[in-house]
Length: 307
Ligand SMILES: [Zn+2]
Image (cartoon, rainbow, N blue to C red; front, side, top):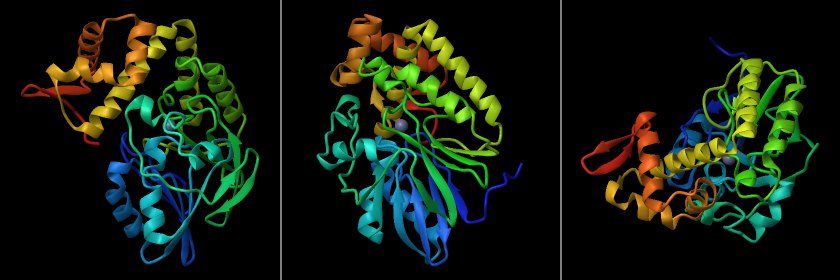
């Protein structure tokens, strides 16, 4: 089914290592929302350049500051000299490049440092592709995240706050930094009050099944509320799968050592699941094999999907 997206809105659909990039054509100019993971930066640049078709990229705006949404910022700014706008709530963290708060060090992820030029505050109105958008606070997966809503065209750019099936990892809740799961629920309730025809998520294809996606997301929240261990297990599997897409392969013999070296994984294993590192490695591998997310290539664990 062809979704009713305005012609000036182009969604460059990516995978799970890189977030989608959403391009807004504005005559001779263009603006972009989110820029993918750093190791994909050359690919992002090529995709954006092709979609720009000679136009000049003047603005880049981020829904939130996770590595898979901001990793191409520096490259795109070097190439086009575009301004970079980040959510107001994370601006200080970006300015001092706090790799701990950016979840880079905890998850053993990397990102090309950039400087932002402007911030977008909660409730602020702005223009993209000749349309008026509102920046709405969407805490949960990321406590400073924004979603962008265009009332006139009933479009929602949801980042990782709402996907077709679920939402992003509950970092704050798992790390005991904030009541992230309650925030996720409140965010979904707020999003649910909007009139939306099409959602452009941070990952996956744009979709029109807004009510169904919300229902699934609420069910997931309820499951996590009932069984917090499930939330931790889910986070570990999702975050490790992301890391494996980046590494491409990991020798089976090195899995336990690898998990031990990544603070977020080690913390979930020790504190929440209370596994020894060997138990953690064995459990994780069995789960991901069962879900057919990973497979063996010789003695190496590899992802079944391309990044
Ligand atoms: Zn995210």
